[in-house]
Image (cartoon, rainbow, N blue to C red; front, side, top):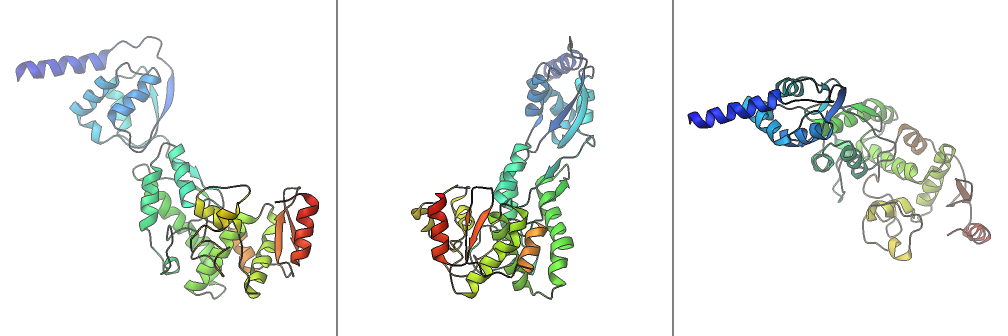
Amino acid sequence: MMAAAGLAGMVVAVVIHQGQPERTKTQIVSVTSGMGAYEVGQLLAERGIIFSPLLFKLEARLTGVDERIRVGSYKISADMSTRQILAVLSAVPDQEPRITVPEGFTVDKIAGLLTDKGLDGEKFKILAGEFRPHGYMLTEQPVRYPCEGFLFPDTYDLDIVTPEKSLLLAMDARFGSKAATMLREKGLTDDGIRAIVTMASLIEREARLPAERKIIASVFYNRLAAGMPLQSCASVQYIIGYEKEVLSLEDTMTPSPYNTYLHLGLPPGPICNPGEASIEAALFPENTDYLYFVADNRGGHHFSKTYDEHLRYINENGQN
């Protein structure tokens, strides 16, 4: 036992007092979710701050810091000893993780953003699958994520310990303070809110230009009133899991309650998380007679009142 203790002390001494040539610059080091002491040591070694991730891990274990390393960004200098570095990594970070979620992102795409930042995107998806905080989010129909559509796109500062959960809770709270308040002021029930947000999600994914949102809303409402399927390409893209420029006939026949080519009415839930402008468009659509739209060559859409007009435009402009 004495020999083992002596050896451990020698190793610690080597870690603490190892030479540090050409390592004087202070750097910002980001520790992300899922990183243990060895992974942090690898990052520090890659930055030229320490030499050995293995010895760094041993020092972290011997000092009990390996269980207290926190997610966040830290200012670390190569002039610091290993013990000083570990003290910094177990304290409050200099910078909390921050993320901007664009309008129209799905739960899966938000998870991708988190993964790109080194956080745990898969954990976010698991949490989203279990998250049911409000009545208007509940449905008996099969949905991929009950909270899809009710996570408000914005910029968020994340909790350094549980960033994935904190983002989910913050986006839900922001929806409640912004969108839900606006919707309830219109006297909508929970089912009504869900229908408007679902419509808004289709508008968000279909509109190419901001000025088109309310016109696209009118097309969808006109089709619903006429008993026509919505035939939203965005709903099929949600099913197949990626954005496809041109859908094939086989794509439009993909069996799913979300397939608005096969099923009348709205899909069972939102297909993305819409922003305030699309929610407003779903509440206040333009008054038009349009029943069809197709992408034009100018970055927007061409709208038609009849199928013949729709086909004529497509044929004349080489649209698919």
